[in-house]
View (cartoon, rainbow, N blue to C red):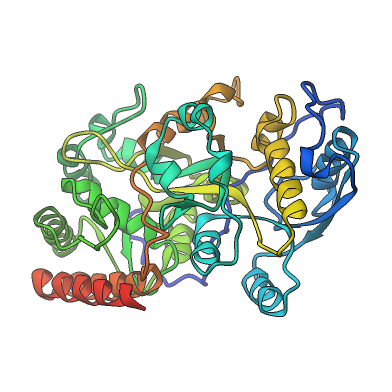
Length: 446
C-alpha cells in the first residue's frame, strides 16, 4: 500500500512454539527394535507424569493432548512396566504452575518445553542430568554444536531435543516486484543475500512509495528478530563465543546500529518505537509494510488466511549479511526430567523421552507434529513435496550460537529494546549501546 499511514495495531501475542497445521497418519503402535524396559525398572511397575503444552499438532478438531495420548499408548505397549499419565498445560500459566509444583514438591517427571525455562530449572538444581543420553552417535547425528549447547546449563545437559525451527524475515512479493527491488533478492538455493543488496532494495521501495518494515522496540516481544537483523548486517553478535559476556557493542554492532539509524532518517526503515514484534507482524500481514523481521513458521501459518484476504504473498528470506552468510536464531523443542528423588522414575522418564524423540517410526512422526524440523540429520526431509518447508530446512543449517540460556538473559532483553528506542529516536548510538551492554553484563550476576 503506497504511503499508507502506519496506524498502531492492537497487540498480538507471539506464539510460543513454531508450528503450523499439518496432517499425517498416526503410525501403528508396534514400534520396531524394542529393547524392553531399562534394567532398573524391568521387574517393577513405574508410574511417571508428563507435562505437555499444546505444541503437538492434533488431528482435525481433536482436543489438546489427544495425539500425545497415542504416543503414550504406543510407548506402554513397548514398555508395559512403565505407566505414563499425561497432564496438558497451556502457555499462559505454564511458568506459574511449574514453579508452584516445584516449590510444593509435586513436579511432574517429564516436561516438554524450550531451553529458556528448562535450563534455568537445571541451573537451580531441579533437574536430572541427561549427559548419558548425549552419546557420541547422537551428537554426531545432530552435527550442530550451537544447537547442542542450547541444551546445556553450566556444562550439563538438561534438555533432550527433538526438533527446531528457524526465525527469519519475510518480504511482500508484490511490493518488491512493483518497486523493482526484486532484482536484489536471491531466490536460488538457500536465498542468502547481502547487506549491500538489502540497502539497494529498501532505497527502491522508498522511492516507489512503499512503507518499510519497522525496527520495533516498544517492548521485548519478538526481539530476537531485531537482534538477528542488526547482528547480521556486519557480522556482530549478541554474546561472545563462550557466552560469558554480552558483546553487541562491538565495532560491528555499533556500525550496524548506526546504519539502521541512518536508514530510519532516510525513511528506508521504519521507526518502530510504537510497536512490538506482534504489532509489527500485524502491519506486514495487513499489507501496510513491505518487509518483516519477526517471522517464522508460526507467524506464517497463523496469518495465512488473513494474508490471502489482504493480497499479501510473503517470501521467506534469511537476514542479509555483509558476507552473504546469515546466522539465524531459532526455537528448540525438547524434554527434561525433574529430580523427584526417585532413580527408577528418572530412568523411566529418560526411556520415555528417547522413545518420543528417537524411535525409528514414532520419532519422525513426532517431529512433524511439532511443526518443526528434526535435530537428527538422519531423519532427513520429513516434508517431501513442500517447497517452503524444503527451503526452511536449508535455513536450519544457518543456526547461530544460542544465547537464550545465558545468565541475565531477561535483563539483557530489557536493555536491548530500551537501547533501540534511543537509536531509533536519533540518540547517540555508541553511548546508548555501551550503556546497554554494561548493564546487561552487570545483570549476569543476579
